[in-house]
Length: 270
Image 1 (cartoon, rainbow, N blue to C red):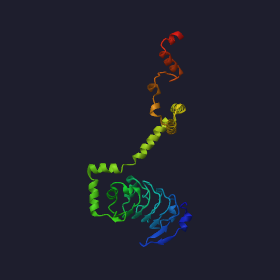
Image 2: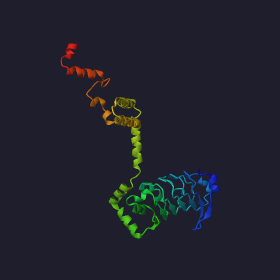
Image 3: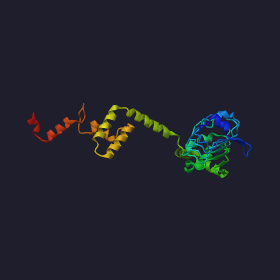
Image 4: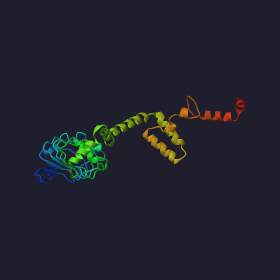
């Protein structure tokens, strides 16, 4: 169900125990954040738990919003500017989502007023140094992480862990910038350059036609789909026995080889 103005008007409203006015949008299978400007920034708490959100972002300016509840969605990405329009968030609940990498949490660390954060039941919580990383990267305002109070001892340990050159290297290892996406796009662009080449396509098609096993056909079909020329087909002029400049390996070379093997046959033929 889309998050429409009609749904916003019909959704239950109440005062929570903290005396925050809250809008309850739980369990509507909402796939994306949209139209929240229709709330007129009237709520301190938004409950969007138990929906189908995949990417978090697209919030309008909501200066009054303090509590954002997003438990049990399918969130795997957070837009880099996700929290810019809602900078006063104090409590953020992301329990039971699909966040996997520490770098995915970078937008959360920009919330300077954040005091309580729950990331329980996300794959990222099993990443090595998850807790000290969040303690180190987040604002000092963060007091409770995954329902456990952050102790001074933990803050000191996190600071020591990521201090100096060794700490920088560790950060780069456990939370590298999202270069992976760039590498993938570079690979795709390389494939795009290679793929459209009619020469490459024809070579692979010819190899498929001449293949003798199903495994070989499958391998070559994958290569044709990706547009990447297999290594064994890359240099036919150099790798093969022939040096034919115009037509490559063909019947003439085969006949010449057979003639030389027979010794005197070429002379007799001439």
